[in-house]
Length: 473
Image 1: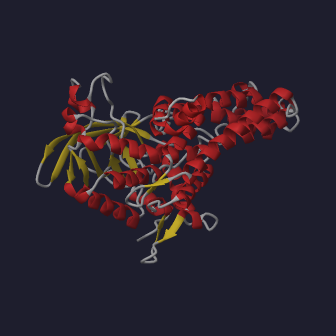
Image 2: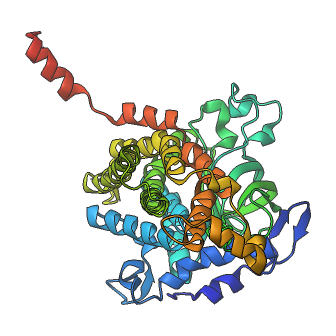
Image 3: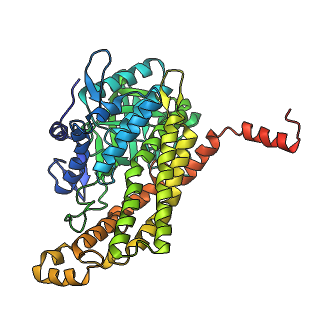
């Protein structure tokens, strides 16, 4: 086994992967200026593994061989493993300026789910692939969400069958797949791609029930990266988005060949729904873990800017900060409780309590925009009317800005805090976070459905029937 350096991770991305960005083919994702921001941001994951302060959390030792490997690849066996995983995700995201790196979190979520759902030879293939990635310290992306077309129709009823990824051909050597996935995070800067079904499927959808893994440089795999938040930006005016970036792609499979040793599900519609839901059990836990630095930033920024503005003792400000604290600590407590309440399946693999995980995610998502508004209210209109870096860098103009933008503190720290809050809540980086809050890892409605599905209401219904004197038989 090897533990790669950040430099080795970056070097590994220099291959023949096909990436399009802002209308042109990108030959080297590590040198293209805007894509490089995402690459360097993700490389943080590898740097933390070599940081003495975080090494004990980020690296584990194989009990049999003594080899070291990334903690992300540890198959969870109980609450402590899940809590440590959550803490590692939180630490990495905090170091990443509130933006998760996701280059191993999501991929291992998929690996854990696959090892709980598939069986027989397919399970052996998944375990072999797990060992392959763990032993080489690889990064992993997951393509799950199909483009879907007309959402009132099933996969097999779509007028264009390529709107769901499907098995186009099956041979002695493997399968050929065709179609597209969307919202594929970190695919541009990962080593491997795991494909999962997006939903439950019926007997007519047999060709669309497929799961496999391919290297990013596989022939026929084309990545079309979103240009959202494109453009250069300096660190005075954009303290977060100048150094933190995640890339999403429309991921197109043009008759991609997948050898059998990398195929985990093939034409098994009965596994599509269970696999999709099992992946979500892990991935929403990952989601609420990486939201913790963001909600902490809301609390800290509201408190700091209120003090700088001289309004920290105002009753309505204290009320807003109290609500932000309650919001942040509720999400944190629910995340931890999901690990403490974990369940262990018949194979000895632990997973976070689905109901608690979904309550945590729904709490975060449903209260996000109100919390964002509270932070903006504490800050004020300078979030969008304040000066930029060119003005600040001009000595003559800076003298004017320093005179008129000071408050309880000098202008410079106040404007820096304003720019941080603006980047976090009012600019495209803030818009990115806001959309992720509602849609990433499943919508609020999907979380409600999972809460209802997970809650065992027999105990409470029996209780109230007994209180009402109704025969419980």
